[in-house]
Image (cartoon, rainbow, N blue to C red; front, side, top):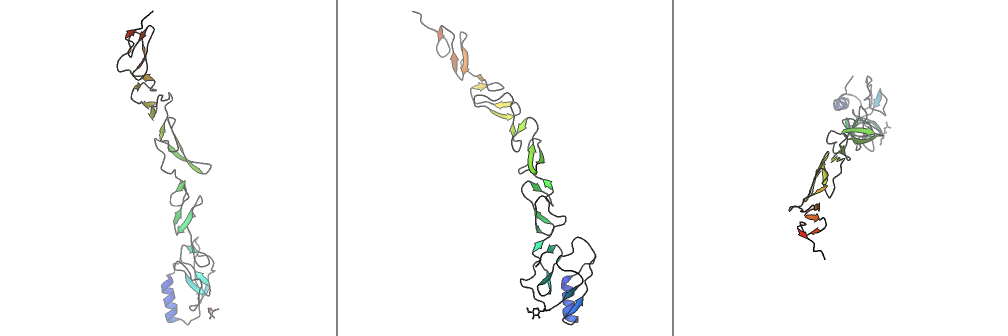
Length: 214
Ligand SMILES: *[C@@H]1O[C@H](CO)[C@@H](O)[C@H](O)[C@H]1NC(C)=O
């Protein structure tokens, strides 16, 4: 690979050689040969390029740019990335890809789940879309939600696989057991927090009274 130092080539030509010279550029292969200009090329120091060559490209003939490494296009306006940006990534500058959401890595070659996958979930491309595949006891886009197969009743919430956090007044694996601070007497049943359902003929907050019989 012959590496040309463009600025020194340019100054050498200006100082030593007549205005119009033949510069035979020798460039042995490689995928990063600038496009649009065939080598060897004619270099005209008086050449003007309008619009000007971008990204340190050199105007070698009227309206013909010789692009510096990593750039291509009529006026060297496009960065080129090798390896190319994958999965629809955009080449921002040589070797720097901007990846669409769902992809990452230097060449956008990796599947990336925004925010990651929690609780041991795996980020996998499903039909080209990044998705978290969750272990059996977790669900949600990031596997952030635990699964309680028994359900969490009476306003309880599932906080870990099979574990409900119950509101005050309820207990049990599914928050299905009401708590009565004062016990229900005479065979009464606690049916909701501090509420007894009494057996006949008992009544009262704790089923402590016997209904008067006529
Ligand atoms: C390049 O363009 C300039 C004016 O823009 C002109 O004077 C000159 O002759 C051109 N050179 C060649 C080699 O065509």
